[in-house]
Length: 250
Length: 296
Image (tube, chains in turn orange, cyan):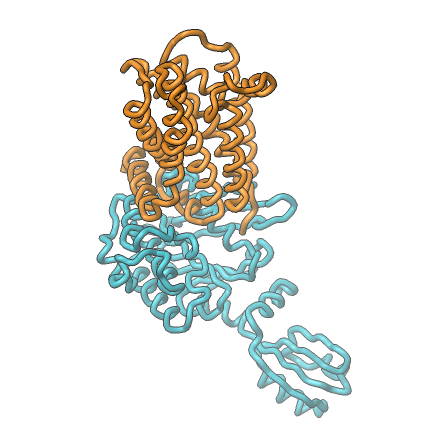
């Protein structure tokens, strides 16, 4: 069978596994929609202002993607590493690329599934607006700015056992979300936090996606920051991966 | 039928940091046999299998599988192996697990047929997490055969099973072998190797200690341990048939191939003894004898 065909098979059974315990991903799917409902919709000052409401919908979408990546890459990897099923699949007569593709597709599907309710709530219950082209560009930029989150998930997954991965993911997710201006707009930050915020991948993603959707001026540090985070996290991931592959067992 | 080996380890050494898991091991797996890899924990059995599965690279030497490099996916098309029983994804059903693994092979055995061979038919709709230890083990072994492989690697296939479950699994493996599959199995149970293997390789501390037909190996590892007390342990020095003797404050421990002959000899020579006990040496003890005296 072709690599793509096998990747599709792996994806199918991984989604079946997920569907059997849907609670495992319900947090990733529902939490972003709920935070939009509770934090944004009741605040008329934001919800009824097209520009601010759009920013808020974008911020929560980034949160959805980040949460999806951290949980589905980080926790999944940590659990797979603990088990012996993944090494067994590695003995099958198909290239490793098939498993990587299947895993990437799964993360993408879950992230998009988490973003869709956010977009729906934003369109129906707030004044948020975006052109068709802006929406497509924004979704594309969401995927690009997810790279640091996927890599952060990889670092957590290869660096920690599952029991330690869960609290670390929670802490990382919450501090990145608040610090990056995903729950409260950065305009409300005290100046020191607004400065620090520019160093976080979530804040950088927020600037980039807003720019992709609405145009306007892009802060110079946003693309550089995303690239720097990606590079640094890639190096750490590769180092951890090497350490993992050299793990001794008989 | 070709007699070219299905898999070859040629002067393979595999190190993990400072320790040596395999030390200059050469081994050819000929088609049609059941080869038993026997040895205590840490002898290098699983390392040897992981090299054949392409999960690891040798530190030096070469490993070939069906004439290719086991690290290449294509080379593994004729290879079947078992996951650890704890590895099965708990939420997948038995039938789904078989279909999932079967999808990797071009000419796979239909799920119903495989389930019938391994007594899994009534379990196909059950989730893996709901299976008993013995049922999981049957599924794990069955998965090795789903792709109609030419070579199957079974790592400790029946460890932890009760006698009945063990025998029925052995029968299933034997049937597959009779259909033409070559089998390599590791075990530290002599009984399991006796039941299935035709050729036996004994590994110890990463080296091949014995590579011979089953009956020859049984002659080497089937020993007795005799314990007795005697006031004159020095008189034992000239007695024939003593492979290994340890004196411990009047208690003497003797390893021998023939305990009956040894005891007759003690009586004939008038050597006084008391507290006589004889038991079959465990495989562990037999390995100890092999490792201590490679010439034995």
